[in-house]
Amino acid sequence: MLDPRRIFVLAAVALLALSTGVAVASPAKSKPAAVAPVAPPPPPPAEPLPPPKIYLFRGAMGPFFSTGMDRLSEKLTKAGFSADVYEFTICRWIGDRAITSYKESPAPIVLIGHSMGGLCSIVISEMAAKENIPISLVIAIDPAHATGDVPLNVERFINIFLSDSVLGGGDVVAVPGYRGHYASYDLKENSRVSHINIEKSDDIHRQIVEMVTQLPRIPAQPHADAVPLRYLVPANTLVELWDSGMRVPVRRGDTMESIAAANRVPLWSIAQSNSLAENAQLTPGQSIVVPRHLTPPEPTAAMATPPPPPAGRK
Image (cartoon, rainbow, N blue to C red; front, side, top):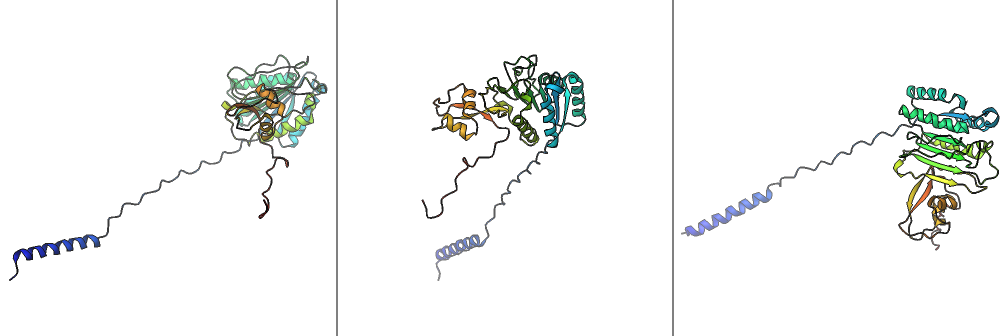
């Protein structure tokens, strides 16, 4: 006869085995799959700005002494831009036309003037400022002494002048709080440059055409980082039209020469930008002002990275 206690123990073991098998056989509850976040669509590419409208202004007796402005206008027109030349005597009338044209069809405004025409460029900039209209670029070429300060609505200002000139000589500065790009070039040490030929430089014309060509394409630059540049250009030196400076940190091993070479600018520009001697010793972590190219130039063959040696050679 079976012992009731033994029957009870066998039944408990059987029940335990059955419940374990059911647990093993039952599929585990799967966790809900994590839903990957959907990345927002990329912003549409910024539409390129329309071509700038360029207004050039002669100085006093312009048809005789500011003929370089006519030649520059021809070069800009050949490059595909709207570029007309005017006398400074109708400055405000042209300013009203430029403002009306901008309101009807917004496009970057470029103002370029020689002598009294340089003064006119600032006058029109001031007129546009009252209408909250930006001026993309102003280039003054030996403007008159009476030329006013650069207003806040001018995004880029370049002054090429002769500080010892009686007919021009306008050392134009910006109003307090100006945050745009500013560069000033005094050519008084170049004996071959005078008030009546400074606007006729083919090299300056070429750079102006290149700069105007790039304006609609360049990305917006943080004006807060723009450092004003003021240069006394060494004698017999070609002017390179930078539009402002930028600060770069000095790394271990850097020298004035190596920084100039790395940024493809002349050594004298680094020295003047920082009030340093050309052979000054630099300290790692020090901040150096370097002229900023509107668009970086292509590396020259001498500065290009050499190709790696063929396999098997060291």
